[in-house]
Length: 274
Image 1 (spheres, rainbow, N blue to C red):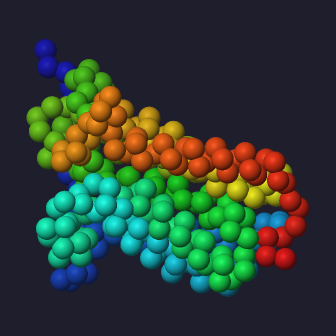
Image 2: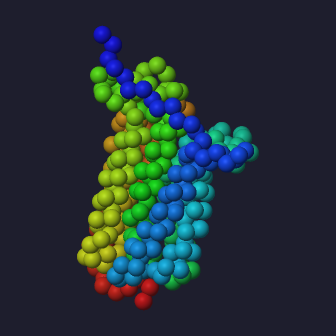
């Protein structure tokens, strides 16, 4: 008797049709994430001790977009397919075919945070604490968009798994919907943890702790979810059965632990930009 397999929902890749112009789900995920994150960031940065004005948060929104897009694209090129893009440089601009790296995007946002904080004379760690607390929102929405697109599917699963499904481009085998695992772990669960942390006054005066909590939490969630995610076909498994996503998460975990330790040892109770 063949086990029942959950059918993969056949989504239209275009979320909104505006005549000849279509907005894809992935683009919509970026738009919603940035808009929602911007509004939440305004409220978080106003919590005592105040780390930035509303106008400064508004100004940083465009910096965040550049950090995410440029960092995510360059990270994918350097970490995953440097050889291909070296011989096909024009393909670097073809972002509509996909190819974004979270680790690269994270590095891009960190650079944007550092540069913006320096120009605005803000405390870098204090400002980063409030901004990184909302990053899991975008991660969760982005993973849902991956699922809608039927990409980044999971490893083969037992047909007895109730939610195993056959992906349109993943072959005939039932697979883990790893995008949804990541949406829950890297998105909903991590967002709950970071928002709860930044809501506590004793955490907010320990500059760097919340940023470290996000980095460490993401690294743990990503490493766990990678156990169910099919590695990229052009990379496969690395030595000892690890994946590129797990390797790139190790420095994040170490940096996160370091920032949390620093924050715990250096509590302050003054506004970051005073």
